[in-house]
Image 1: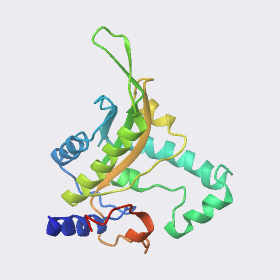
Image 2: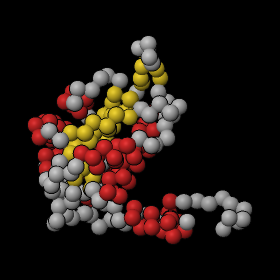
Image 3: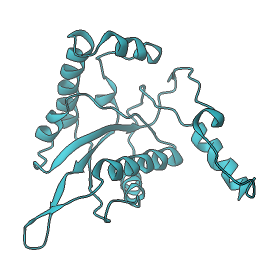
Length: 210
């Protein structure tokens, strides 16, 4: 079990968010499997309040990029982001331009289902929606990485344009946009340090399990 634990950590530690992709096609079956893996996530009352919308249509991807860049330009250059936020983003080298949205073979947009409907069509409350969808998104990222695919958690704000472009109902709210594909041969990622175990974990034990 410890050897498996080490292998899992080493695999996950090699994951990086990527902003430089190739346009090499990715089989739909891989995206399907990643969504199926994500859908094994636990959820409040087992309501599974997520919807994955996978887009490969170039025209729709172009519309998403245009709308996302408009919002991001307003955030970066129009004063929506405070100076402190912009300063925090500098090490990542990001700006309002998002060319990867039309380069990648797939864009997967995850929607949080705020409420559902029962068999009679009556409104049915979902529970712990943000937490449930967040866990599913984490498993989606892990599944993609395990397959050898790359992605990025992109959250242009506000994201209402995704509901309009993808024609989603009012009970679904955009949560995260994932560009999915293969990293470019010359892909670069920031040289960042992850926090150590000592920085993220506290222990309250009786010593029996040490």
